[in-house]
Image (cartoon, rainbow, N blue to C red):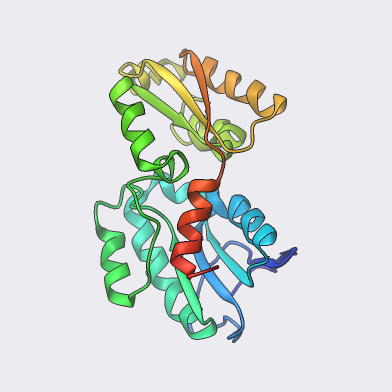
Length: 224
């Protein structure tokens, strides 16, 4: 496994996970593991530390979300070594735009993933997320990660830093930005306002916390 690991409390977080050639994940039968979207790794680490889980996190690059056709293959490449090294393994992705391709990996390896279509309904929980969508279908969603990384993850990735005139082409059908806040702060609120202003939409905030993610992880890992 390339990239040095950093230790945060009980949760060990590997650098951007990538497997090349033969297995390079160290045997660690006493610990659990999640192959995770990098956009969730901070929250997963904080949950694990608080719950005292013996968890190692293998985060994949968050920008895979801009290329969802690559998510299933990236997870599949990493899983065999992770499974060999750990007693319990889970996939910390929802479907995330793979249109069922990730479920093919789940079925192949018999390793569970987060329920839901996106991380938005993981955080907000499915019932509330369905209500939000009914309230305003033209909603552009932000998480804490997207608030922090909006310029890089959205503006730069869409080329709007070079071609700002394309913004109406991307966002004309949206009516609002909704920040599903996990850990709101004045700093993040200011960044969320900047993000909404960058695409000329009003900002609304709903505090959802991380309990939805925590409950799903506990279920997937069979944690007490």
